[in-house]
Image (tube, rainbow, N blue to C red; front, side):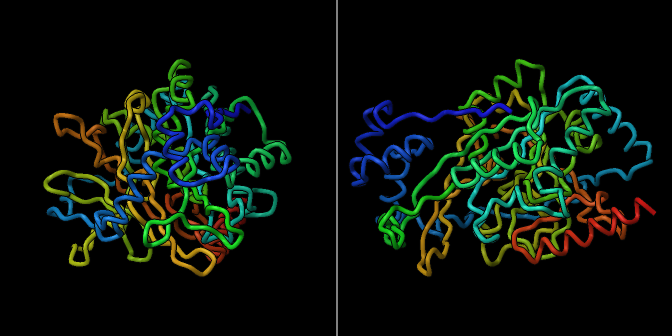
Length: 402
């Protein structure tokens, strides 16, 4: 296992960073923690100023432009297994596996607040198999079939890193194919823009969203390291979605389209807090749910936060807008500025063109009885979700052994 560190001490930070931290009135110990977790002090001061001036709020995240439902033909369905088109896509994906061109990134950072605050990646879905083990097993079995190693990269946070590394070692899952890197840390704010402090008087830290991936993956050097080894494609998914497996058809779709980013979308049944595929001012993109105005149409395709990225497109900075999200912490309202992966489709270059060209593919939400892995979206945000997923997964395992 390789742990990619990019931590520094406060004394090694630029003068502007040290001045910004001094303006926040933090102790030296607090400054050292934030320095070690790549806290963006100058951006934080800008957020504070925006909240205090009233120019930044939850309402300011609402999209003010024209929103339309994408034409159905713009988002094709993933071909069913056994069809000629599916076989052609799978052939292209399998060839990429054999050439060692595919790596996996699993998102296991954040705070897991809706799951009790523990390290969700280390929780057993079924006895002896955690979320993380299931994801790692999928990558390793796909690599064995292809005859090539598939690098397995895990993005952690300050709240999950130690637990994840310990879990990998204790369960005997460690190996040279595993790469661990860490997202940034920030400080929660009160509704009037002051530092939110816990009952212990300490600043309340948090991990500011899975959109940190782009910056963390590049800055820690892992992107360059994988590219030098011949990796061309990154399959990205949440650790809590066991439907996000390595499917050769999905990789083949990305290879065929030749885009920078291929997004999996699935039917929106109105119960998930997630982004949607939209046409925003004439352009296909993904938009997080909290950004949609109340009078927006019901968008039929939900983003499941599973993507294939071309690794070359990740070499440049992909600036994401931080949006305010309200949380309840210790029974009090708090604000978090979060960056969301799907919002990378909003990033534009100097000429106003998208930084990442986008393709979307519509995938089945869930499989039939006994066919768990025919589905692509089984989110587990709360303990009750885990019970439902566990039941479906055990049903499939029982069917396979009959």
